[in-house]
Length: 324
Image 1: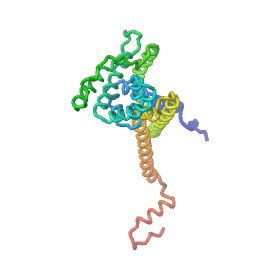
Image 2: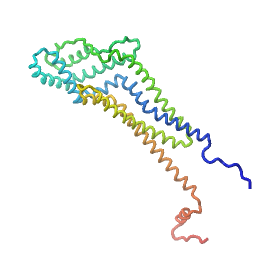
Image 3: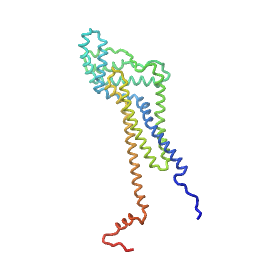
């Protein structure tokens, strides 16, 4: 007998093209998502003065940071005090303890927040203003000193009113690094907005083009979770490399506390991507599994032993099966 044309076995060319394009878009989404989160955190999280000060504020109560401040300020005071070498060895512990006691006061927390705000405002203004001259970014500590002086005076600390308020410029950013930092900051501003938007668009288009959309959703969710996990790993590795590259005279516990405070928001976003991606993948898998079971029962042939046993189980108790 003549037979008709053989039907193609497997997916057609159009289906294969849709699957390939969908896989490419989903892969791009999963690749851009962690980089977009990193760029958005750097461009908008660190660039927000209020959020930066709020992130750094708890460090005023951190014991490692207090010890580092006490050591640094105490050494600076001893360099300025004109006493003999034997007296320096005797006075140094008392000066350090006095500064350590000061770090536990409200005046220190006020000075800490004011200093961080002044430094952040100066750096941000230099990075955003391209017309600014290529000069080192400095912070004037006179307002900070004035706030500390007012607080100590209100607390009735002896001789607090005689504290001199001098305009002292502290360099926080060298002039040689300004040009490169400005270019990098502008790139981060663009990437921090467009990378997350592109990742979402790629995900939506990839799922819409997929022949099996549930599988596409699972792949996107698992890729998102993988991106969040890699971002957490990058933060851990970056922390170790940052601490390893510090000079020996910089206290590592205090630097670690500062690193953790600055990256806390990014770490939260990474965990959110990881948990949300895994949750969506599990829900998609369960939805497909639950939906598949009724379809398989409806497609079960009537002549199979399973169908016969189902008919036998459906008979009322005490009623004999009809003889065929």
